[in-house]
Image 1 (cartoon, one colour):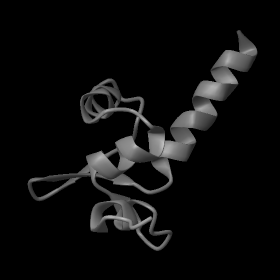
Image 2 (cartoon, one colour; image 1 turned 180 degrees about the horizontal axis):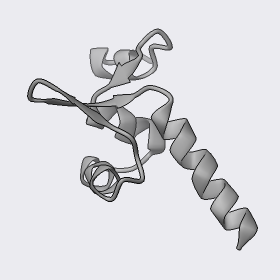
Image 3 (cartoon, rainbow, N blue to C red; image 1 turned 30 degrees about the vertical axis):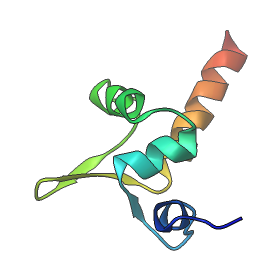
Length: 73
């Protein structure tokens, strides 16, 4: 099975910033949902020039918060 260049970069552990699409892929959600999470403040992101980037550890941090919230409920 061949990997496309886009999927190879999404799985690259050396990346410190992800595109929104790469972050969405890591969360197994769509691009629109990922932008909604960013807009709601649930998923950390930052702007570099005109680019929106997500820190590589932000998807895991989001999932950890969600799991803690659901365990507490």
